[in-house]
Image 1 (tube, rainbow, N blue to C red):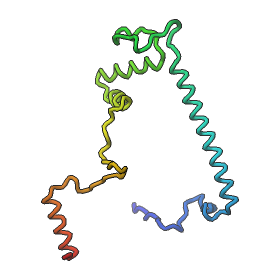
Image 2: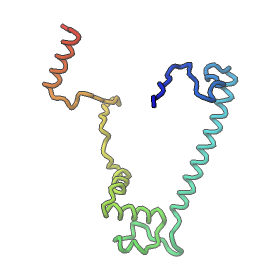
Image 3: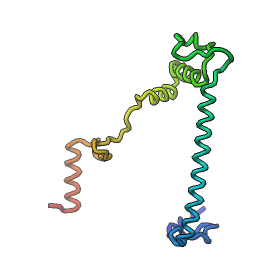
Image 4: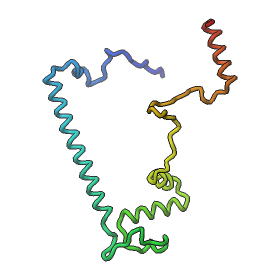
Length: 158
């Protein structure tokens, strides 16, 4: 079976796209209408996210049982926390901590990241905020010299 070559030219159209008009070819009024619809949809999506976040915050603060609530600050051991009447949030924190203590790496990483001990990414960022990416950082000085000499030979640089 022979694979068909990919069509990368800009005039190639996929099925269903022959009637589409590029945004920059629309009139300003048409562009404005589309942007207005997008703005309304974006606002609705933000409202939904905010409402969901607020509902979760309420649910997380509800105690698991009726009666007086025990906070994490009042618990002196995992054994005592097991039957304590905590909020859902406090119980989840205890469970994640217990899982990390039992060797769950993802639980450990979640805790580490939340308490601000996440290791820096491999990319270095300078004081002025620019990204410092050096593709030659793993090469020795001799390897760098050899690469430069090879480039000079191939390009005949003096």
